[in-house]
Length: 314
Image 1 (tube, rainbow, N blue to C red):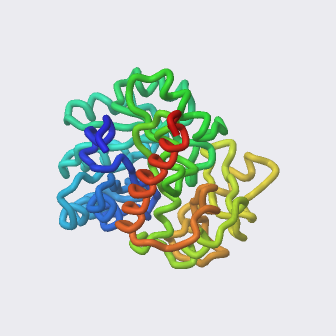
Image 2 (image 1 turned 90 degrees about the vertical axis):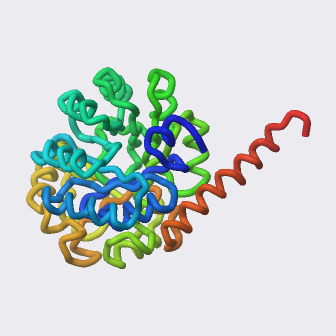
Image 3 (image 1 turned 90 degrees about the horizontal axis):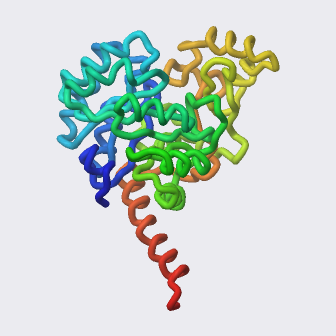
């Protein structure tokens, strides 16, 4: 495929590894990039030294483009951007903040930037700030999401209709059907997070992978609705945080903090695991290269079937 996203990111297939805190690190990002998509390292939770180390590790494993996701509200955002520039990164994604405060430094360094948005208003502001594209994150996505509760199916075509820059669809996509649907809506790329949890190279505990593979359509819940909502798998830990009083729920979520996050230890009952609603569609463990090959081939096969279906001469 060739479009504005493949050209911008230097990839052969316009698919982005969704950033996950302390999960999408150097080796996993490199494997995604080696397979033709765009791997990225999530800067959230990483010290400057650790981020630099993960970028160097990825660079040793592949010479294909690697990205960095930078949550702009975090205190280390400027440091993370400086390290990305230092390490020769050519494209970054940003989230949870105003890209206008960082755009000059990004552009002066010659980087491309995609900003995560969850509403038309946010997308317009990001475009006005000078970002090169937006990632439309629907309400069904895993991890931190917007408060607007707009789904990917509704959000993507609205953004495509009002923006001149490319749109990447994120949230509720796990197979070729979802990828092709996103393209049909006008997206020029897709971002997958939850599907990559159930891959052999994902550095999460096996119980997390097993829970994703065994999930049903009602396996996730939202926490922290007054502050920054986060979609996670239901378990005893998330049930303890859940509260009818949203301010209390936010306080309990903040208090649990790093101690209960999946990469901090614990087990299936005691950890908080970010996960999207699409987990109900994930039924097996695959290697990253196998998964991306399957997605690409599946899109081609489905597009041929649809072409036949709508062929007026048939």
